[in-house]
Structures are given as C-alpha cells and as structure tokens.
Length: 454
Ligand SMILES: Cc1ncc(COP(=O)(O)O)c(C=O)c1O
Image (cartoon, rainbow, N blue to C red; front, side, top):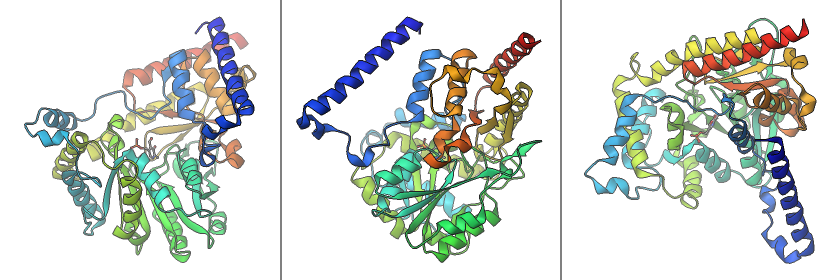
C-alpha cells in the first residue's frame, strides 16, 4: 500500500476508535453492547494481525502453519467420491457427537495404538478442528478459579480459552539449555522443581502439546512420566494436544501420555484431520478419552456447535480406513509425511544459519524457531512501534525484506513474553521452490547488508 493510503487508513481507524469510545462515554445505553467481561483482554490475535499484514505487503509467507501443496491422493479422492455419491444423506445432518463412520475409524485407530478398547460412541467426540476440541475440554472442565498449568511457548488459544471459562492459567516456560552450536528442540526443557511447585489443590489440569508448536519438541518418556506422576499425585486432568502426532523425525518417538500407567483415566487427547492429512481447511478434529471426561465436552459441543460437516467427516473416515490398511508401512501417509518434510526442515535450518540466525532443529511438527539476535544491527527495529522486539523484527522483515514469520512472544503469558522476543517462528511445510525463494530473498538481503558495511 502507498504511504499516503496507509496514512488515510490509519487516520480512519483512529477516527473509528474515537467514535466508538465517544459513543460509549456519551451514551451509557450503548455500553450494554460492550464486549462481555469474560472476553475483555482476549480481543487481540496474532493471526488476525499477521494475515492482514501478509495481505497488505504480500511477502513470502512462512508464517501461518499450512501446506501450500496437495495432500495425499486418496484423501482428496475420498471427498470427491462423497460429493458425487448417490447417497443423499451424506449431505445432511449427521450424529452430533461424530459421524458414525468417522468415530468408528478414530476408535479403531487409537484402540490399536493405545492397545485398549475405545468405545466409538462414548469415548470419541468429533469437533470443528482441534480448536473446538480444546475449547470444549476447557469450557467443559473449568469451574471459576480452577488453575490450568500451561507450558510456554503455547498454542496461543490456550490462554484465552482458559480465561473465558473462568479459569486461571499458571505458566511455566520451556527454556533452551544451550544457545550456541547446534540446538535441537530436545535442548528446550522445563524446570522440574518449578513444575512441581505449580501443582496445588486448585489445579484442574495441565495442557501439554507434543510434538510441540512452535519449538518442535517431542516430550520424552521421562518428562511425560514426571508430569503424569504429578497429575496423579494432585488428581488433575491432562489435556494432551497431539495434532502433530504423525510428524516426528527419527530417532524421536511420539509417546501418548494416555498410554502411561493409569493415565488414560485422566487424559483427554486431541487430534486434527487438518494436521494428520495436511488439509487444514477441512477443520475436522477430535477428542478421545474416558467416557466420564468426554461427557463434559459433549455437553459443550451440543450446546454450541452441535454437529460437524457430514461430507468432510465421511471423507476423513475414508482417509483413516485407507491408512489403517497401510499402518506402519512406508507408503502410509502417517509415515511418509515426516520423511517428505525432513529435507525441508534441514534445508530451512541451513539457510537460516547462513543468513546468521540460530535455528532450533525441531524433532517434530513443521515449525522452526530461530534466534535472530545476531541480525539486530541489520534491521531497523525502531521503525516499528510494537511493544515486543520479535513483533518489530517480523513486521520489519515482512515490509522491507519480503519474508514473513510469526513473533513467538504471542505464545507466552504476559510475564514471560520477553523470553520469546529474540526468536521468530517459520513454517517449513511449503513447496521446495517456495523455501528456495525464501532462502534466495534472505541471503540476497544479507549479502547486500554485508556489502553496505564494507
Ligand atoms: C498445537 C496446535 N493445536 C491445535 C491446533 C488447531 O488445529 P485445527 O486446525 O485442527 O483446529 C493447531 C493449529 O495450528 C496447533 O498448532
């Protein structure tokens, strides 16, 4: 956008804000339409802001987490088959807690991986993406004042979801034990004493995310045992966000906390078809766990969303059925996606290092955190007015260099935002040519900087 157009846009936004405030001051009757108290403070979103930024400056977008290439053929074909099916009922409402064919497929898969019999009708809930599964878990299990332990950096919706349900988030940060040489996500750990000190009689639960977004950490058996023992000691829930469960780079191994001794009873595990089959726009997710815990989620679901899209659920079910046939084999998408992503991960780590950043090599997922501190003298942070340096860095890079990342301070509670300030999060589930283009842009920019300094 031209600078003058920008100025006009900013001025009109300012006038709009003043107008709204004036309406509220002058007319108490209008305050009746203010944002409800439980959402105040939850109205900012890094996604809304950065999607708008990308639309305005059209950078090479390595920000939001979605693939820019097609998913596996059988999943796309499944949706085509459903859309052209002779069965008219596939376009009508289906069972509210999950389309029968899909809950059966989900129960079959997790019965196999957990080696227990999961009841498709009582222990599985299909939701609008993992997002709704998180929402239903937190709404359905939070009384006012309940505490939830949240590991930072965290998928940003956890905090507003806890707060709007009347809960209190208690944060604990993963911290890298080293910052020089090759850093991997295994080097990011939580302090065990600090974790222990957060558990108390008010703790309702802990949210874990493995494989982790944005660090890429795959929690070890020992770390999960430690958390599980505290959950048992304090009789708390565990909400385990495992949307990247199939994207793990060897030798790391994904361990489901629900599979640990006596943990299924207190764990709600969350998954996503968007991440499992690289179709984030389908927005089909699920939660599974013991019937008594799932019941609360069903109540939230039936009083908000009620039921999810039938054709998409049918197609996801067909995708699972196909994958169940190939389970454990190299041509299974559950195996092949990580194999396909590994060279992309390594390529990104290489070019970010060449540019002068220090990336953390992820053991899972498709995001990479990179420390940009060494580039500080190459960017004009003071041209941006944001509070946090990672926001300044990512905005400046989007506008002036043309590559967009996400500021990780958005994934920390207020008190710890400074811990994310020297990092940027990039996504590498992108076509090779787009990663190559990002590398070319960054390296060209870096070499121009070096020449200017000589
Ligand atoms: C850790 C994590 N949890 C949940 C979600 C939401 O998944 P869905 O798109 O299925 O709602 C995401 C999406 O990026 C995520 O990264």
